[in-house]
Image 1 (cartoon, rainbow, N blue to C red):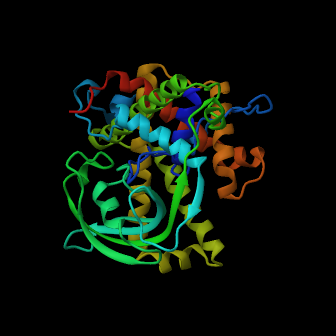
Image 2 (cartoon, helix red, strand yellow):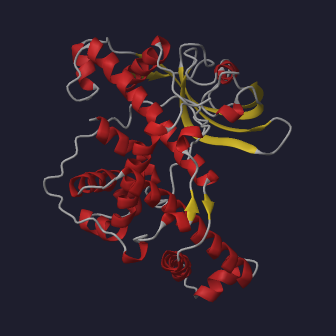
Image 3 (cartoon, rainbow, N blue to C red):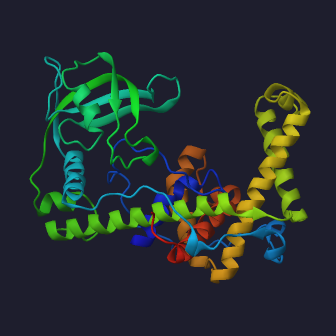
Length: 378
């Protein structure tokens, strides 16, 4: 189950096939809307697609220098795992099953569940921090930024207000924002009251968390999920730190040319969608042909560097993605991403995204092996 959960949490990497996931500011802690799914792979039997141009059959010492993982300083978000955090997650689960009543005859008050749109910029600047739509906040629970909740209290449906808010000193959604002052523009969309269901066996079963049926099992499940989340945050930090601190020595020609050609192909396809030639597309989107070529070279170098890091560590840690693991990853990503990509069959998904899924799974396994040598954050 943990293995599938990890795959679900990494599916957002699929559209950036050769990059690691990026940390994003989290105004609210994650909820269980995307709980582990029961993946059926019996009818999925695809070979692992590996591009001939991306074999990296090279002496890595001649192409890249990777820092000693045991000496890296990692900075990353961690989710609290104390009783308050656990109870907040249980509350979020109950809230999904709650009976709700919309309120239109009074202002928002503590205990209400509100839906808001908000934007924020660093105080005194126009530098945007976040732009969120239809965010649900339980006033008084302090699951969101406490000062943001306080600013919403007293607002009425349809009202928009501006508030200067200081992020908490221990804010973990994005450590860069801790203790920073920001200006929020808040629009209150809806006010509701929520009648939470009793936390009994029937309710816990309705959460559909596998075999979880008791309160003790629910807490254990949530703790395991939080620990898994924190492991993934550390893996993400390790990946990004390795990319930042690794040094290219030389560029393998075949792999470099592969990405140059891919950049051209993507640009050509984008032009065709708009009914334009590649030259017209370049003229419309770049200051000059030279700028286009510079961006293309940066794209190729960036992707080759990321590949070299992963393939070098793949060799060091002896990582191999099995066919079963690949098909499980393919199934998970198909079910999660195919609709958004307009793909209706897993065969089409495999044909178009199969290599990206392999890269995602390979990255996950390689960094998962390497993270065991990485120190905890300072």
